[in-house]
Image 1: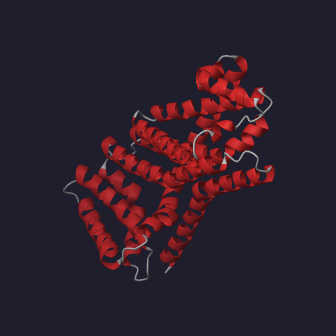
Image 2: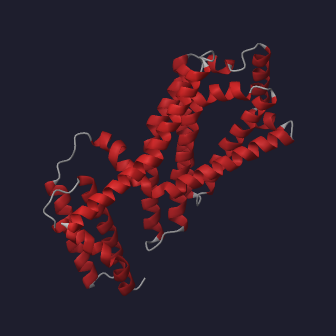
Image 3: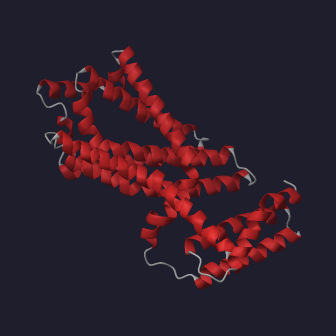
Length: 327
């Protein structure tokens, strides 16, 4: 990109940053950090392509001012771990809603493919779930306890095993994003086809409601965060395919960092899902209203944290910036 075009593209942003840094009123530390990161990225680009230009000198001064504002005047919070989950991550995740939607659509599509394939081919379910699992489930159905599989292992063993396995699946979905996102799409496809065929199998046995009210007690959070992990992989894939004004390597590095943040956010939810599967799902005789309540609260938690709360924080940030620029 020519230097003049680079300046035109970013001039308004730099002037706003400059105004923000010169403002004497208190500025949230997270906002200052975001300014510093953006200015540093622009400075790195300028140093690469316009090393001896006035633009580089200007950005170096702007970055220095941001650095001083952030690291000399900001007191590092003792609750850094808490603020990452309650403020930093949701605000950051707002910018990846499109990848989250794409991950959901891929998963939903292959769920339908799995159900349709199971309906069209009687052997499909066995090829996906395995003969041992299908035979065991049919035996449980004959014994009037179709969900007995969730009672086989001890609570703690199931909790730990399921949690570790789900985190492993999430990490695979993230790391396979390096295959331009195709590896991530494959992981989503695998899990979605399995879910679709699994649910159709119970529908065919006349047990769709019984299976859904039981499985989705833990599955609401489990499946949702697998989709979020898919979003992390797609963020990495996007950084490779669409680097924008940055070099492909720099864009990829940024995408991996962003994807890693997303994966970290899923770990508490995978633990919750594992706990529910290990200790709660096995209570198959619980009343319908209680199962529906758990499922509804789980869905509300996911939608709040990954969709509505990021939008709310982003809107609040825009309002705060507007006030600062008006001072």
